[in-house]
Image (cartoon, rainbow, N blue to C red; front, side):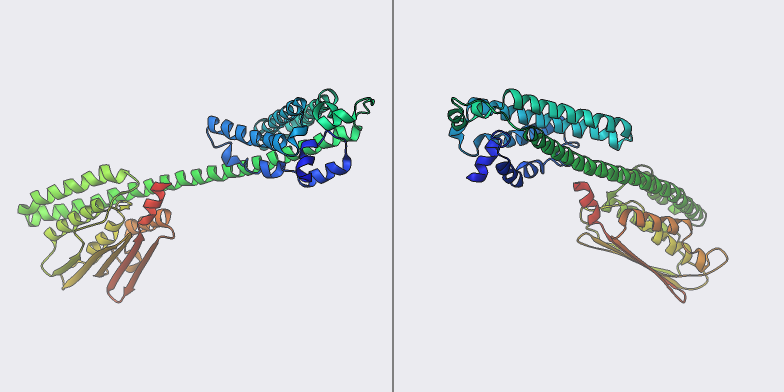
Length: 397
């Protein structure tokens, strides 16, 4: 009870010993701690105002309802109301007006205005102390004690030190949270700039891959039209679906997994139309797929390379393609022979497409993918593992 009583009488009874004890138990720091930047600057104006009203009302309530409330006269409530309103005004001026000057480089103006803010704060406090905050007008027991006695007033040190202490503390809290807010704003701004840069890079990589893929597909279709013209209409229909996918769906950051797999199936069906009889193609792709998202045209590059570098008419050859989905994890396995010549030696295997898809994987799935490409004698094997749950976590943010 002694601690609670000293809070109510702080600044008003002129007792320096009691004030030191009060300062050691001051509730101001704990009460101002919730006022972090995430509660003010980023919030809508109405929410910010309501939050501040609640905090300052809580501070007022501590002074109003702690200690011996029967000892408080109406003047006491007027004084603490004026002080809390002035504290709120002081804090908001520092947080929203003065400190932004410092963090935006206008430091000379900042250093000129800070003393003016403190002078106004001290002047208001002195005015309240000298005119309204008379102990005999605020506390019933002081009123009885002062009867028949001359008003000695408060020492000047007591009039100056407490408001200077609370002003410095409020300014320090405002500076700390404003600095943290500026740090967070800068960090988020940098993250947004990096995200936009990566999106632009990925868009550029897609723009490079799509024409590259279409060129190869049109070359294949040309070969079909010459060797097996009766298959050309079906091939054109499949190519039409693939072009539609490239032009419209691939413009989005992600597509449903079943759409990208359908694109792969169309490509494989188109390849079957032109494969020579000495090529054995084994495909394992599930019919039922979960509702997952994937970045478009990541898988097709590895599959396309198997046909580009693993098909010949001079000897039997095999191509194995398997896609397996377990939960949110997708595994792609491609195994084929490699027939080296002047166009597709080991150092050129994959060309532009494979180089770009590696960059896209690192941009979008960094830390969420495994890519193993091995070459043993004439066998080339690709194993890609993707954690597609990353798109679900991004969509929830």
